[in-house]
Length: 337
Figure 1: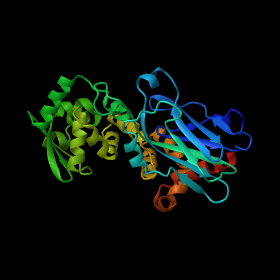
Figure 2: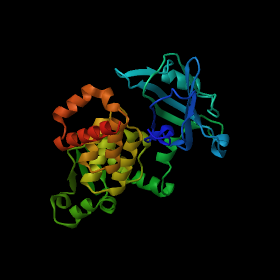
Figure 3: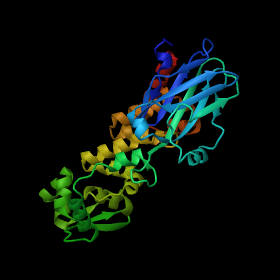
Figure 4: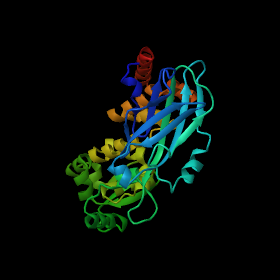
């Protein structure tokens, strides 16, 4: 490891890892700044009788005016011998709740003392579950990721009117049959949002003749979410609950902005429970950023070792070319470690 790389922290959207080859030559080390959310952060380690790990935001006007309220999991993984994980001794959800009203401003606000001696290479792994800021009006703290995903809206009055057209079936002229029910919609709105729908209605196809579209691969709930997005009336929770169905529909009906919205959203909360499904979706629907992020999460950040059973099942049933790509990344990573 070069001098410069000894202080570098690798990151994805919510995960940070600091790899340390050797701490024997010094008693204190501070990482280079790394960006998670709106803030630049630092990790530091100090050897005394114990090893002290600190996580804190870089001092700036943003930190002074709007310091973060953080929820995260922190681990130390020692790479000598068996893979060995030391996790913060306080339950993370309880820890987050205990600091809900405590804003992290300085390097004394989060200090973790590790009594177990560490030798050889080790990794400090921080997975951010949420980052919040204080509400300007003095209400409950607001998640910055919620703000970012719901902040892009068009004119509220026009969107509300479109939403009413759908919700109240105002002059609907086409019926959409989902797998377990039907919904009324408007040809003009569908045609304006999707070139596939526009082509259906422009030619003498059965959809035009029967005033009916069959979408048998979507449930009523997913189809309602799909139409709500098209009409500009979707709620965040509804969008999150049906992201994969919406991604499939966006790809099928060539709705580029919906596909991109799903792509961006799926990048935000990759974890061990969903990374393999997202990797397969990224390959199937040609989502390069999501594919790269999943590969990095699995290989560069070492999470492939945490999901061995799921990965074995993936190797049995997954796409052969995709499995080969994963193994290629693993081999490259081993060469560089």
